[in-house]
Length: 260
Image 1 (cartoon, rainbow, N blue to C red):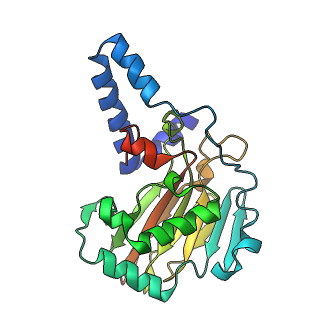
Image 2: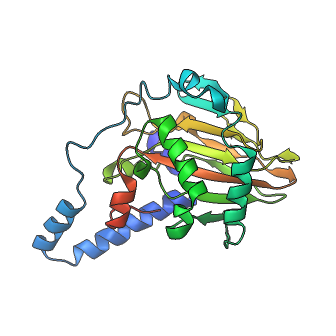
């Protein structure tokens, strides 16, 4: 039943991970045993790689980042709402930076992954650095920022940000997610956690951080973190997704050992 529940919540991003893994195995199957062993060694993380302490990471947020106005909505799993995650000046810089970029329409929303020069912009580095400080991980553990837009009538169905097999990849699971709200929404657009009974309002400058895996075993997804983006009834919702991995994501992505 647990496996079936996991499957029910596969979103398009998760399906992309599945297809990437299948493609990788088809490629490997056509190669020699020596080449296969070389690939396995190439994509293997060091046994000394630091592992995030899931139990203590977020318990210090209230006292460490009061300027972001954090409010704990849940401690099991952790869900924290930041009323002042980004300043008005940072929002304007972010919108100016992303304004000329081309968004793709998919899954009833418009999205853009910020690679290369897009990611290296000062505003993106600032936000990724802030996310790393809060979750106490190096910036390279964080995936490329995904910018999203929900126009009137758009929503995103209930899903989980972590795929149950991501822990098998060298970058490990998406242990935390942060969604940054870049706009107010006239009506709708909240982030809802149905199992937890929690609603995070779409408020310009705010953000919601939540834990995707179990504290006692970060290799296992916590299905209570399943969430959805409620329909935008009026206005437009703009935001950013920041996904935090347990290990160095950027390094393994550059090596071709991770996917986005």
